Image (cartoon, rainbow, N blue to C red):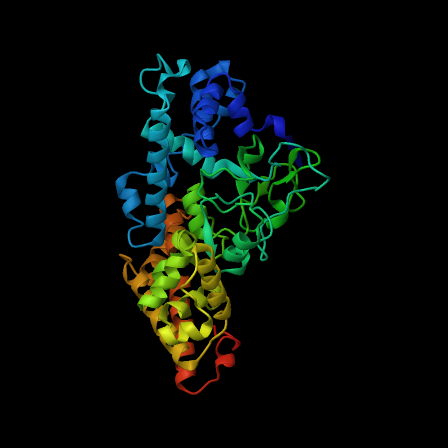
Length: 456
């Protein structure tokens, strides 16, 4: 349907080559996210003098994006894990702002005489919102060459083997099979750090792809309608998801694996067709060490667990990778020793031992450990649900009323869809765990617990 050459994309290479900010980017050794924010702001300030002006002048003001919401709008997410994610992103914006000001971004000639500073919190929120909502995360080769005939860059899948071109790289996730097993990706990635913080240098780059980023999203479009980067052609390609008639709106997919919360926080909307009812909860909240030895094991995992999100799926019980950490968290010293935990050695040896234990615990180890793990997990999920200001039933009723009034595309409707998705996933997870607890009390074997068919 369309092919956009790499030379027509705004990316870290064009940022470094920019006459308005390139020298500062190189001198300050800015990280790519900071460089792209500065690239956007300086090119916008340059107006028609910028080669990118025909593209930039048509960008929206992003006022509907969560990063530009007022306090009242942000408060609508209080109690939800989305609120913590949004606050963390705002903190990242402030960090990037301070870094750019410190290296002299507001002293650049292009920003002078504009009636104020070039780099402000408001302008940085705008630039970040543009990158989050319109940026693609493309697997350019590290050296910029076309490579060895690798063809189109692969997308992330259940195996987690590729780069998800639609997902901001501040996402560490464990759980739903559609986003893969992050621990396996990180440990077997041969140094390829896709899932780093959003401003961390990696083998992928954030890029703005004119024309392609103007298409609207449909959750029904599917993986075939996701933009791909062809390393051979050094171009981004996009294929139609179906046949279109003259006058039809052409749609693409921002990622068929995106949860409702991803769409809301990244793009500022949730379409009615999205059926990914997931809740993303910090793993450390679901798996909380209950003893000193378990605490030592979690400390050995250290930074790797710090930002990890557990994905709870309304359509299936908790993923084995989540359960493995919950089982480790409630294990007694004797159990941990039996699972092979060794607190001796250097940091690398301790990390390897911790991962070996959790690999062992992807299946239930004993009835006693499983009972404690299920009890702990059910309590943790219930606590998350208790933090919301409204119930699932209240949100669903309000959403239904908005749709009946013709306001199903409003910002409030998108927030409600995201909240309904989260709460449905949390409720169903709590029910699935409670069912397994009942099965265990009734004498079910360990192998029966998680192989049993799920009830609707």
